Every structure is written in C-alpha cells, then in structure tokens.
Length: 410
Ligand SMILES: Cc1cc2nc3c(=O)[nH]c(=O)nc-3n(C[C@H](O)[C@H](O)[C@H](O)COP(=O)(O)OP(=O)(O)OC[C@H]3O[C@@H](n4cnc5c(N)ncnc54)[C@H](O)[C@@H]3O)c2cc1C
Image (cartoon, rainbow, N blue to C red):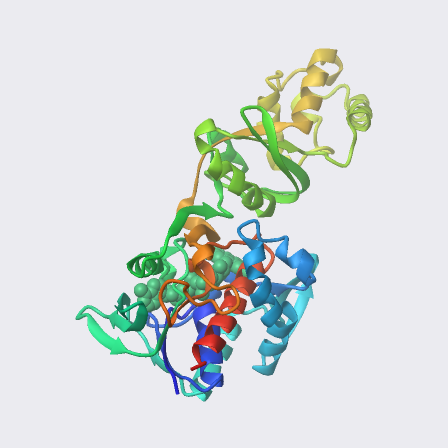
C-alpha cells in the first residue's frame, strides 16, 4: 500500500486525497489552516460554482491558459463525473444561466463538508495547521516532506502538491507550492493575476460604486488597437471596474498595463448608430424643454446620469432644444464608447493565478512530475487557468482526481 502525502486541502487536494484513499493508498493530507477548503467557501460568492455543463470541446475552449493540457484529466473526470460524484456524497446540484452548476442548497460549505466527511469515511489522516516547508528527494525520487515550524520530516512514497495559486492569501494560498516545485527543479512560468478587478485612472468611478450594467459591450484597446471585446455584465467599484466581462478582459489589461489600456463601454450595443440616434432624437423631442441633465432618465440608470453628463462636457443645465448637432454627436459617441483608462489591478483579489508549474514538465495523463518520480501536481499551482463559470474548480477537481488515482498505483 502506497503512503501518500497530499499538500493542501483545497479543491484539488481534497479530491486527490479522496481518490488516492479510494484506490487503496494510506493518505495524509497536510493543510496549513485549521480548517479545509477556505477558497471553496468563498467561491461563487459563497455558493460555489462547481463546474459547467458545456461539452468537452467547448469546455476546453474556456481555458485561455493551456486548455489542451487538461484534455486527459477532463476525459478521466468530466463535469458529468463531477456532478455524479457530488450527488453520491449527498450534494445535489442545479444548473443556472450560462450552464453554471451550483449546489442546490446554494451553500459552498456543503461541498467542503461532503468532501471532509468523505475523507473521514475513507480513513484519510488530516494534518491541520501543518504547513509544508520542503520536499525530501533522493536520486530524483520523492521520499517525503518537511513540515511545521520545527521542520518535522514525514516519509512517504508519493507527494501531491496542491497548494493553489497566489490570490486571496488569507485562504492559505500564498504560493508555497511554487517554492516546492522549484526545489524539485521545476520551471515556474511567470505568475500573473487573472480574472482580476481593474483600477482606473478616473476617480469619478467612485460615484458609480455598486452600479451593475447588464447587456453592455466592453472593448479593450491598447495603443488604440482593439485587443478583445466582451458582451454581458460589468460593475463599477470604488477603485475601478469589475464584474464578469471585465474579469475576462483583465487578462489583456494585465499583459499591457504599462501602455494604460482603455476599456470602451458601449452602453447600448443592441442598437446600431442610426437606431441610437433615432432613439435619442425621440427622447430629446419628448424632453425638449428640460435641462440636459434631466433628459436621460429613459436611456441610462439614474446613478450614471450625473457622471455621464459630466463625461460629455456639455452644460448640464442647457435646455435640450438648444443642444447643437455637434453636442448630440458627442452624446451619441459617449453612449457608444464610454471610456476608462486602466492603471493597474487588484492583484490579491484575482480569482485565479496565471502561470505556475510548467505543463511541459508534468505528464498530463498522470499529473506526475517528469523530473522527480513520485511527485505530482494538481490544481491552480499548475500553469493553467480558465474563465469564470466553474472552469477553475473543475480543473482543480479533475487534476486532483488524476493525481490521486495515479499516486495510489505501485
Ligand atoms: C473569490 C473567488 C471566487 C471563486 N469562485 C469560483 C467559482 O465559483 N468557480 C470556479 O470554478 N472557480 C472559482 N474560483 C477559483 C477556484 O476557487 C480556484 O481556482 C480553486 O479553488 C483552486 O483550487 P486548488 O485546490 O488548486 O487551490 P486552493 O483552493 O487555493 O487550495 C490550496 C490549499 O493549499 C493550502 N496550502 C497552501 N500552501 C500550503 C502549505 N505550504 N502547506 C499546507 N497547505 C498549504 C491552502 O491553505 C489551501 O487550503 C474562485 C476564486 C476566488 C478567489
């Protein structure tokens, strides 16, 4: 029977420990926190978007970071397998908009508790408050780990590193796994925040704090060149912009931050320029005796109007019937391209870390290191990242499954 040490009690580590034990290994799970799955708890705003129901081909397209590497693990443990697995542990699931899968209870704690209970039933030893500090390696073969403040040695046959990425460090993910991988001779692909809220140069965003815009189109420009465009929902915050489409675009902003990318928001993407002009003319005819600042109630959310009016640089008190053709053009342009300049990102609030242990040095069929025998990687510590919608947890669970099963083999 193999003795397996799993480092990290997050999505990947819990799944790895479960399946290694199920396959007959004696498993020890080392978690630096007093409790398991802290990041799962905050995932999906506390509801845990476990996976997505897209089929495999479309699924992989949702990993801008090395999707192909995940092919084997997603085949071995697919979204359907994941749903069936959680149902078998008593966590019923439901599908929401965009194919997102959540626990029916809307409680991420049910996911963590189910996994915890599963490990207990399989006799996995959980080493709480045990931070792993190093690996024991002899002749390119893993021999165990070193953990705790007193640098205790723990000898075993296999080690699975599932320490997560770098964001939300309070959950325990502070990048320890990258150091462990480096110690084993692995290459760490440059680490960057991904799916991250963006900071803007414009301080007026503060006045829009909490405002969600639905069905808008955001386009990112770098040095006036269009880089990417997303349609959907976004949010203004006290420091800048966030929400699903901004998180997706953030990838490009992070890559080009020194060029101060511009996000142009089309507030009315469903209308052509001509249709929007007709719409504006209709409203202006209706409100011709009102001041400009009081004429936009049918077009824009209330909170946005004062900011938008200032943005156009047109006198807010000007009567609508005195607005010139040029000014009307400025209003139209602003509705179609309301711009903010990106100056940085909220690194520690990234949903996921891009970069990590190079996929070139990991066998995608087993998750075993190609450098050190008996060493496995799973989850976000690997250089893979997906978009929002359940893809990152599925990647962690699938790679955890594969690493767990293979670590149990002699
Ligand atoms: C706010 C937020 C919301 C999210 N929502 C979703 C969502 O709804 N759906 C989705 O698919 N993805 C979501 N994600 C992403 C997803 O949660 C992560 O990609 C996923 O949890 C990664 O799993 P992991 O097991 O690799 O790492 P983690 O979940 O980060 O787990 C790593 C574990 O290792 C432990 N650890 C670290 N170093 C050591 C050490 N040296 N010794 C011992 N233990 C150690 C940590 O304490 C932690 O428990 C969200 C992320 C965030 C930040």
